[in-house]
Length: 114
Length: 112
Image (cartoon, rainbow over all chains, first blue to last red; front, side):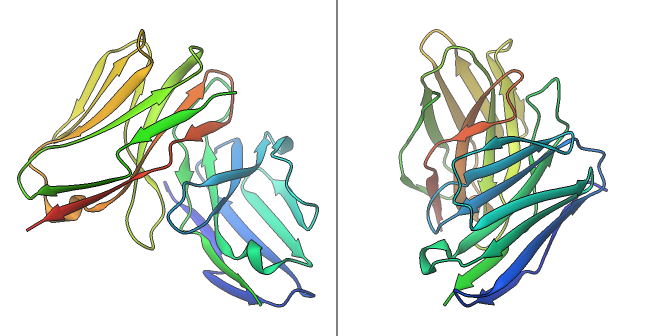
């Protein structure tokens, strides 16, 4: 199984809502990533988890809260978002230590904040 | 930190012709250079990658070249087909670093 899955595919939320994005991989990868992608732009790194520990936080606002419950799962908790946070949120995974290695991307969650 | 520049931002080529996309990087410690293809509404997918211990790598119609001295690398697509239309991102990464730095992307249009 060489796939990264993400749910939901689409999400519309108000600025006062709390929601979560989910990501799962069963490739035995030990590094997992959250990216934000705006239209016509490259993916922008938000967080990296390595061996279930947060290793990189690219100065992301606290209204985004990542969580890695185990080596296969990655969540992104959303609270009090702004309209400018509307974007495609991509999860990715890679083998981890000893790399760098290819990153496998999930299909993304298209988030709209109203 | 690392910075990756990518040119051109848009490229139109006649079907059957070749396409070349060029990238430069700033950090001489970078040693892994992947290329991702992203079709409209889809996820980025790795199409080819190269490490700094080789100068060229080929996979059917796709090739990547790396010039470590000049700190630039290029993607070459030969005999282009309509399904090659997409956005292509180059990237660079350093050994032991989980982070990859993307270029701004090239929108490739294959004209019939």
